[in-house]
Length: 303
Image (cartoon, rainbow, N blue to C red; front, side, top):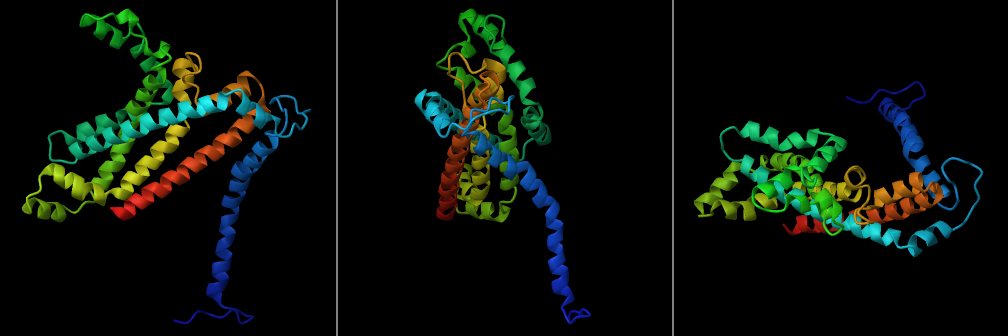
């Protein structure tokens, strides 16, 4: 059926298509007000000495950027953040994938185990942080009691007070809370694998490990990419557990990028310098994410 003509000879379908763009205006307005404007304001404050309270501030040029590179806080926080992200990405994806593969088989009480695996993800970071603070507590904590029970010195067990392992201790908490989310995504991907393909592999003599390595994993390559990218972004935004459990200590061992920004802005009340820190962090995270996307997309094509 031919499209109707308007009074002036126009095409009604074209008119309707043009009117559809009007519905984008509210979304664009929210995007501009709630994202573009704050980002531009962040860049603006990064070249001032704004303290977050008094709007009588001066322009200082690139001095804020110079300061954060000179005092070593940027390098330390980037190192801590990358190390934290590496631990959480690797462990949460390995554990999540292993649990998903196990729960994708025909086992009893499969629904219960799936729910139990995802259950930690339902808690807020504050609740999880406080719970694990008591788990890690020396002398009277759960792990310390187990160490004492087996003849060790539970009083000496204090991972949050040891600058060498404090970052790994809070990373384990992130893994415990987050592996359920990766497990659910992996499980959804595994359920899209055609059973006839697996059956053909079994007929050809493949065992379950070979089926997983050569059939299942290549077929869920896009799922692996999604999980890794989400885990990387989540790891680079690490703040909650460093704030709740260690307050950035001991020393500077758990001060991540986001924690350092918070401390400079609200403890030191140097909002301008915190804005400069945020700008640098923004580009670091964008660069890492782009590199990860390129690597993972290339890997998908190879698979």
